[in-house]
Amino acid sequence: MAPIAVGDAIPDGILAYLDDENKPQSVSIHSLAAGKKVIIFGVPGAFTPTCSLKHVPGFIERAEELKGKGVDEIICISVNDPFVMNSWAKTFPENKHVKFLADGAAKYTNALGLELDLTEKGLGVRSRRFALLVEDLKVKVANVENAGEFTVSSAEDIIKAL
Image 1: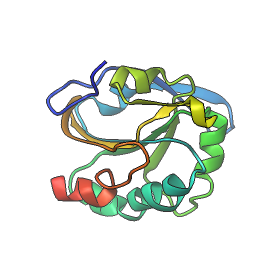
Image 2 (image 1 turned 90 degrees about the horizontal axis):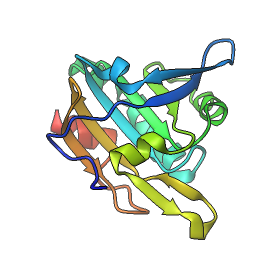
Image 3 (image 1 turned 180 degrees about the vertical axis):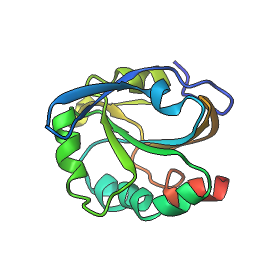
């Protein structure tokens, strides 16, 4: 499947998270994005160096600026389970706006055409690193990285596009 691109409608999909009582819940992407301006960014894995030290912190640090530019939701997706995503989110106590959602079986990642097969490295199927700017379910910006890179999907790159 071709990767999602500018002008495409994002597919609906169900992602998972833990509620305030640490119980697994599910949410549809369309319920979060319909009628809104949202950023959906994907990372290869929770607790991995580039994701934890650069990609996620950039969106957390720039969240107020993004909100000020009309962004309603900032969503981080990774091919991990909701327990891992919840634990990872807790390592960013300053976070007020980024939602951490789990795509445990990579179904949504596959629907976006953004899967990255790292089986030979012992990591299984993951997500490519990406950042999408979506308005009312339509992709306005699609910044998708090549494997191992972090050059076009930062919060700063999205801010430039706004």
